[in-house]
Length: 466
Image (cartoon, rainbow, N blue to C red; front, side, top):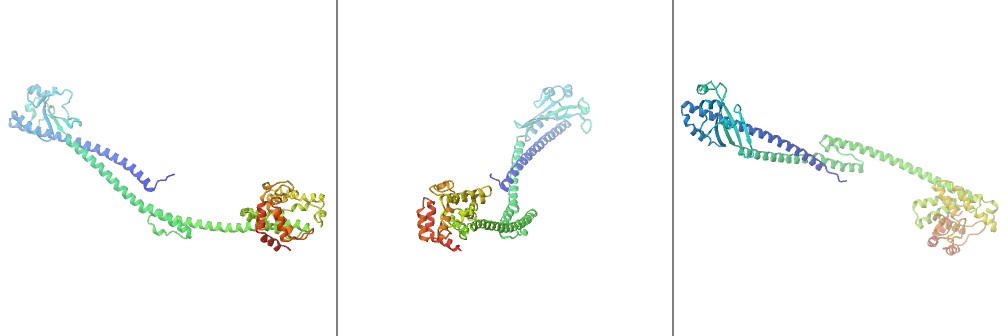
């Protein structure tokens, strides 16, 4: 499974955070700009209405109200003012009638608009705002409206209808909004670079360095130099790794010591078992009054031939350990037959042949690999490659390989050594006999090995003859 780096994880999280932040700030700033823009436009409309009111008042004071059209025409040329109209309220119309002037309207022209409060109509699609700013009758100051108008103090006597062009403000708002977003993105990019630099310097590099130093410390049984790290957390990590490394090395040494003890114990157990198996074989050997060290010779030579044959080290050790019991069944043969110096009769030979099955029956009940293998060798070491052997009449590869090896070793030892019923054969005669039995008594491959290493095998037997 592909894992993301700290930088990748941080970048993903920062992008998520900054996207939310940019969207939130943009929304808030857009709303704030919009409200500020609306407030500015409304305030400008109100101030403009005050200027117009002041101008009309000055005309009234000068007694030149008939000249006010010039004033209204000129003031509409002010930037951003699209149109300007004066609205007469009901009180003024009742007193003076409906005006015929171009830039004046009657309140009846605006039946759905209240003249009692400032009213604004926003048309951002076409880029303008319409403002209705009322004029209230006032009895205070130099100009007493009640002197000329039949109105109550504070009553609406008219209103100013203004249309202002706001497209410039909208353009500025959009421009500033885009600039704000660009600045936020730029600052987000700068912050990401700063954070990445910080992560690289104070997190990624120290962690990689700690990992490398931890490997070296473990390999050389040393410690990490914690003073190389400034950050408290990284320093603590290095310190903890040192403690863990020390514990691991200590446990490994303890395990190594235990393994050495276990190895020595296993070697002792194996040696004891080997000596026990040989001792048991020698018990049978002593009873049959056979040549001394037959058991040891069979064990050693079986291991050597097994190695030359190509068996594994475990199999070599197993055949060396179990082959001494190949004739254990002879303890069930009577002394009259077992110790007879001359040639056995046919009936006596049949009794003697029973030692293979007797040995198997003695050993077969164990579930241990050593005794199971010994039982298999005892049962099969008198089988022959051509099927003429006993007790089962097995042939070729039906005969277990351990039994095939012990069979040829047993015959080699019997022929090269003196027995109570015969003298030792010469090497030439033994080798000739073994070659004759190729494919008959013995596996051909084993005969080839004996022929190739005969002097070596004969020396091993002769060295252990007493």
